[in-house]
Image (cartoon, protein in one colour):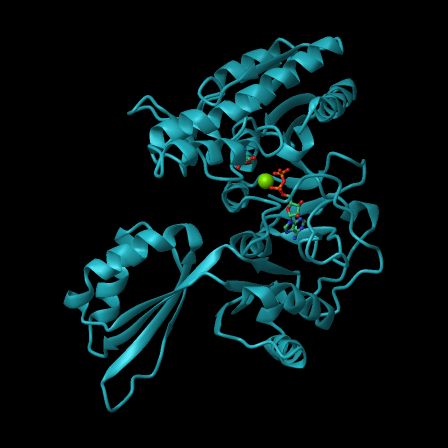
Length: 428
Ligand code: ADP
Ligand code: ASP
Ligand code: MG
């Protein structure tokens, strides 16, 4: 008998039929003799719809109230799921994040889990119940307020529960059969991966692959939780995310795979670029600028500084950040224009970022050449480049992103003959 944590995303519980399908999977796991703890997301696009509603009544909704609102989505799905399981003749009990002991810091909208005290969950399990926990939400002890963990945060709830309860595996169910070499909605020839290292998965998640939430992958890596990403809509085995020293559960079946140099390609349309034109090229200006940027709450991704023109002694500095943070950052920079002494600010929200991720880059040369060759063959212009040890990213026109991703995916030999299936969801 194992303890299995299962997480069902919004597309898996989008309607009554979906909830019944999920309930059946949970009951089947219970019937097989396992203890089951479930983290569930809000139904379908509920969170997006609640966010839209909030912005209709207030341009900048109060963070505390926004968390009260958004956390209601998961309360609906958890109760409906527990009821469905009851009607199938099994004992199930739903819990909010705070009832489940999901303790976070006080950072509304992006709270971090600081402790998990699953006392009530243990009791329910001991009494033979299936446990259902509302994903995405927690509780701060100082403010005594409800928090949410950031978009996609139900994945983190599941991993945190798996760690606290010492579960054997954390199964993350969604509308695709596992983790692919690219988003199958963008690249239908994407290849399903048997397994992926948590290091590579972190880079994929950080660069636009929303199939797993980055903080969930980080948490699992730190706590040694085995993640199995799979589909609600099929019984196919999915993809294992393996932390350091973790064995691939499937290798015992003899399926030893050769590790490819590149694990996957990601696309990201959520970023914008800000260029500060005519910055005096003297020591301390970059520090001054990025102090303002960070105070505005933005998370900077890439930074490029041009060589300064000898005649003017001025340079341009460009950086990318989340589109959602651009307005506040532009405002903060504009307010300091005369102090910093720059000439102009440019805002470009039509960019796209393409990244190629693979641990094999450490030991193989020529990986970037393939990327640049593929882009040059398609005539697509590169605007910015950045690299990490296992990733190369380029910024392009957003309108070129899909074409670029298709070409790059093919160039690395990642195309599969079997077309990937996306079972449900709107991709929102
Ligand atoms: P859920 O609602 O279950 O949390 P998400 O929508 O957050 O599901 O994540 C699943 C989606 O992630 C898929 O429908 C797919 O479009 C997208 N996705 C992006 N990159 C990848 C990838 N590399 N592999 C699989 N899915 C991906
Ligand atoms: N419902 C939340 C969201 O849409 C959390 C999640 O689904 O993981 O972001
Ligand atoms: Mg998700």
